[in-house]
Image 1 (cartoon, rainbow, N blue to C red):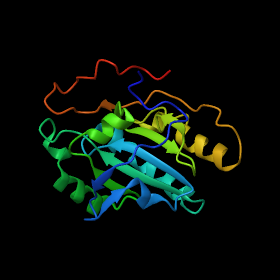
Image 2 (image 1 turned 180 degrees about the vertical axis):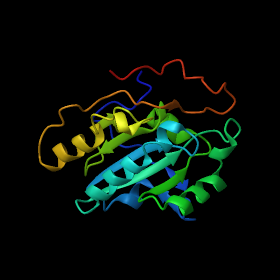
Image 3 (image 1 turned 30 degrees about the vertical axis):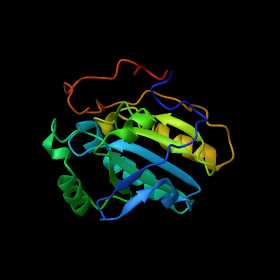
Length: 193
């Protein structure tokens, strides 16, 4: 059995609170032509150092019907800065162009098979998974970035082309699982390619 959602899978539903005080399900984003769901957090240097590139990608494709949704599934007991109140503070400070959801139970991270932060999942208008993996090839230091793989996938899909690289390994810190060591990965988790 796969740990991470395989390509062509349907997006698993969720019902999660957001930093804007709303509660969201998959249907809340029904108007999006393409939905980018990504697992993220507040403390990870791979997230922090690539968030502005993610912002640029989200803003670039917004007018073409692409919506971004960030989900923080990290245990606040491993990194206190990943707690919900700090998510609210981070959004107030940075005003990111995505909805930021809190998966305290980690059920959504398990349903999607999130491996790292950040880990991106791109779903088409039928909510079929068409891209999974990294955003860029150097998220910890974007000055060394040679490829924005997420942007390439979105551009190809929206141009009616086959996505040339639909699966990559996410690059980042592992998801911080409740009750486990900070570096623990589920035994069935593995590289995607």
